[in-house]
Image 1 (cartoon, rainbow, N blue to C red):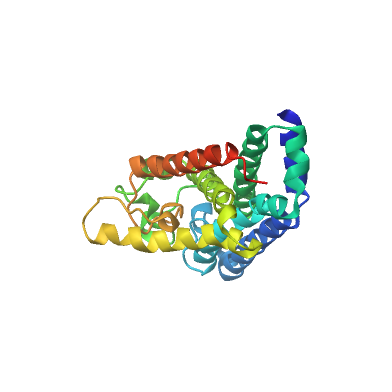
Image 2: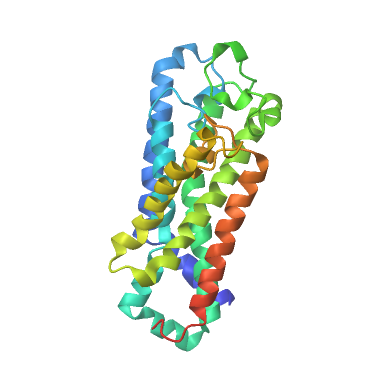
Length: 271
């Protein structure tokens, strides 16, 4: 099992998809920092990390752009490798040496982790740049220069008001979990797609569509918490998300994808 996992990690980190996902995320992250610094750098003593970090910088379009593309970055990183293995016949060579269970377990684990890492790198990079140029002190509430995270009804508002850095790191971890969940769905749907493009973009499309549909439930007063994934993962928090929902949603995503992959690995016709 260890050998197949190491092999998958080796393939993942050397793949064009992973490098391109990280590069695109870093470009968006870097442009956000440059735009913020160009606009407010001369007043850096008055600005804080909670205003500069891309996760909380709602003043420019890069926050919305990054979190809109996040599902695509996650699924493009390495999740399409199963489709390539299946269509190219490489899976036949691997299953001779390892069991189906080991192959799919390794593919699931590596796809989840690489999807998470592809999202974490740009967010951490932007946070480190913000920490290098801007103060770590708490933002002034009356400045209205950060998202709604400090509002008492918002998720982890108490942490935000005590230590902004911890709040940022906490949401980076949350984003990593959701990115991993989205990434493994490409493995689930690969048997039903005809090309690599569909395998990678369908999880992205489903995330966007589900966010539009479930996001309306809040406004229909059917729930006290927004269920749109795109909104839930954004640290700006322009909607209300409960702690229960932020835990249940990724757990359900992991459970569904795990069951799907478990059933898949027991099939005899995958090759």
